[in-house]
Image (tube, chains in turn green, cyan):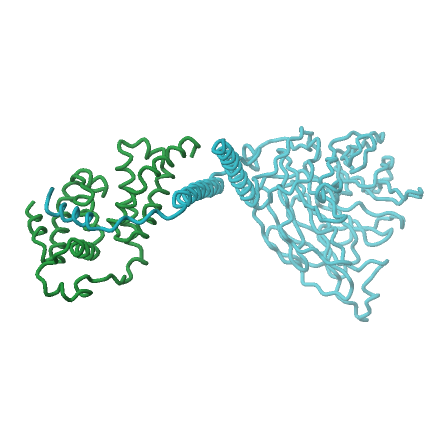
Length: 177
Length: 459
């Protein structure tokens, strides 16, 4: 890579690193892994910078690389091991009795726990569409699939999330959209 | 905003502050990215090199100047000597894998002072081709005589090699085919081994000598005559591979067929020779002085009236000369002696071909010498290149045999040596070398560009 191109690359990384790391965190649920994923994606972007910088949307290009890196990482054998995750309900017996958690923090914990139990693809589609706020076309571009697939996957993912968050009516309501 | 989006937004709102990015994150990302790019280029270069090697191995390389038209046995072409026998080359192909047709000469070429650079070669008669005829045959170990272990047929189409201890290998120079033939069974109590003597003019029979059986008294000394092991005469019929020993025909030192093949001259010891029938029966004796040896293989003149003999000289240099004797028994005058000691054949009844050293050319030469007036004309010379033994020594020719049936018509051709296809090991070496050059070039370019980039970055 030429020095000028590398300067452009560094400037881009400086500007977008936090956003990229945040997206990675939303995908994987762990800040350390998020940094690793973001770095993996940025290394790939460096190798293909000429093509990336010529893309219609550099952010979309990088996002697609990040999502691919996340999905590939999930498919690797060392990620198929059982990772102990705190179960917010089991860890807090009082929530098992309550019909619905009350605090926003608890809601967040439940949401993260439920997301962690989704399949990587389902998690990615939910994160991109509802957490990152992308529309169907942008999500399809990030996942490298058709809009129809995004819609169907979204539906399955919401159903799966509803099963893991039975106390949240908002998820039921979402399924109707 | 949908309910689910609101749920995520609420989660964001409830989230603790994001942790700071790890120190040096950007730098480590950049370093890893550069490493990755370098590795990718290296892998690309290695792949390209492998691809080149694969292509080099698969695609036939230019094979140098190959033989042009195959020359069939019936093609009327005039045989030729090369104006110059070429320099030693390890790239010379084998006559078995790349036959080049009939040969005008069979010779050894090289040097083995310190390292062995040695080849047994045939020089083409119809084109300037050269092929190895080593064939991996076993030579008789010292102190047995390995010198008379091969013969070139009179028409130049075949070579017969002796494979110690009891096999002949017949090589067809036009097809590269080899045939293994057995010698007669022999045992000896002397340090002796079979010797090839002469090839009949019709090409059907080869006379050779085989150690005589141990004598009745069992003494090793009785197996020698005049200091040499006693060898019996034997014949190999190349038409059916049969071989016969002529019992009690020894000692036989040398032999030569008359041009019509009806007489076989045999040297039976010092100063003693026979004219014999083709099956080895004595016709009459020839009187030779003790210092006189029959010229092996090619002693008979083309008209069958003369026999060439080698006579030791009384000069301080111990030079020998060729003298001629009349075999007609009419007492007709014979030509004057020829002052060369290595007669290789006859061009005509009045001219012979000899191997000699030319001070003027500083080279070994083949010369045509007139028996009438002794004038010599250079036909061919051997390369003066000093590329034997890794460039340490000059190469020399030894044990030259000429296709006696081709000499009368043979002309001289300009030198443009064709040594056959490039050996496969050389192709692979070239491919590997090309791949290495490619890799080094890519790495060099990459290094230069990388340094330039670093300089620009520092600026």
